[in-house]
Length: 370
Image (cartoon, rainbow, N blue to C red; front, side, top):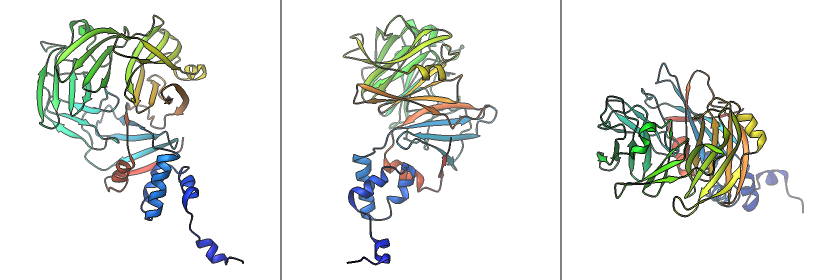
């Protein structure tokens, strides 16, 4: 029996075929598809759950150093391998935006402390400033609290001062100061920060000396040595999944020979296991001329985004697969706008986050081709 042409054209696509098709569609384009019908909604959900899941995004904010309200927000979606520009119609930031922890953006002035915790960093919390005035502190989110440590101005009595803001009670609390051994390097330029549970780990990037601050007990512990070996001259700590990790730059100033990832096993000081090493061709592409403090790592989900601030056009993406193997790739940075400051963090988003933002009148998403 011959099927009429009109009937064939109207025949619906069901099941595995539809899910397979959606697995090749950029995530941002699945937002309107999600609302076509209940069957398509189920197919999108199934495709994301079983075939090609959502992966954490890299969020890049560029800001004019002369006019702080002039900002541009970009996002890299590793699932779809695309860059998006996000037009924000809400109130622009009037102060320099910074990032100290991989999932946090903030601004700090004598009059106000603002911070963004959502996956796309589109919403900002406004709080009174900490009691101690700071220029470049370590700032980290620990549960519902935000810890601000070190980075105090020269005229302050205690450069190691630590304060903690509770987002629920909206109250600042003074905490024990950072250990005296960190007195010469209290700024975020020299310190790396990672959070496991209710504990914040602060690592001196050059030496690997690490102290841990328990935000519940209000106690510091350490020092611990998180420098994997003597060939590493620059350490950056972070979290992949729920594991404490160390990215180590191997070699010496001006002569980077490698970048490796280690997992901290057991408690701090119990040992580390090498997880992966950046391919040599990527080392040559992004690490030439690297200097201390120029290598930054953004950790989110099972991804580590490595960049050299002196080679802004290139990013290296490392996805840790099943906790053991690494998949590396080089990505052109579509957010580069020479003459602007670049602030980088991560966003562990879900489909609901993207739907709320894409369907809102406040934000518009544009796909960029690099």
